Image 1 (cartoon, protein in one colour):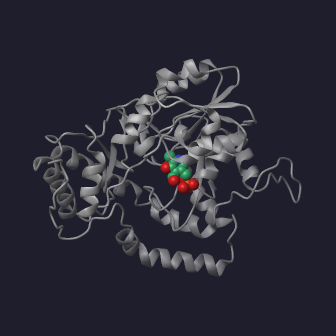
Image 2 (cartoon, helix red, strand yellow):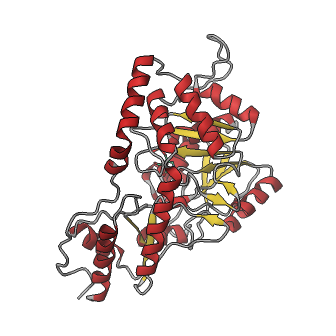
Length: 382
Ligand SMILES: Cc1ncc(COP(=O)(O)O)c(C=O)c1O
């Protein structure tokens, strides 16, 4: 019998992939008061609450600037705009990521150049970068996928050698470290998302860009507000990429808890590692010099059993999910880039093998035991 073909455990309670209710319940009095304060202040667009959050976020990163924006997607788009990426320019990135990474490049008429990933980390493999560089290459956009920083040392060396800009897609990795440096502070700028599934989340959409470059920060601030420099003087064509004051105020409160939440994610991840040791799955890779913040705890299931395990977990009330089922070069909207199947084999294989398990901070030991038992049950009753 194929694993997963039989009916198994009926869990004591469902285990969702993410449950924000507890973290919000715990902070409710503070958040309620703050939201009321913003409402009463009438300062909804930029102003005091946005500035407070930006200062807090910059100092969290030991960085000079943080610029609050409307989403992680807009953080990426705005970064590329501010760095002067033009139609026809090439930006090297990974196909194994959320759509927005490559979407932001293509929306400017630039060309996403997909190179393959390191199969151990799911991050862009730096050894593939130089072969992809042409006279049109202007930037590299590494993604710190699932919360593990990409190998930024060699990536930055290559970028310097070829005079390329580096935009870190740090949507999933706030608080992660590469050596002693925060993700977001290694490239020209780093982009954060505060989408509800992220380690630091707001109650809607928001994002931010972190940078140590004064000129870039000034340009980002100007472009997020239509390119305006002085009353009704538009010196660049920007857009409305502003963060809402209410979201910024909520994020200021939640940022104080981020490190404690991250520690819990790491604790859950290490507990999974210990309990899944003897099972035929590969647990996430970690490195001394790279702090993984486990936005996702993603295992690899070999031998074509991933979908059966996913179904088994879901049937038993466990909110496992596949991030991401299709590498971006196979998406219909990128057909014009003319990638053939097999052109980025590690990414294609990862898409058939990855499975993310619940790892949110408030996950209880009992819930995690249910996830572990359900996985063991699947493999051991083969
Ligand atoms: C890797 C990655 N890049 C970009 C984004 C876009 O962020 P947002 O949803 O805030 O636009 C996300 C999150 O959704 C993401 O996971």
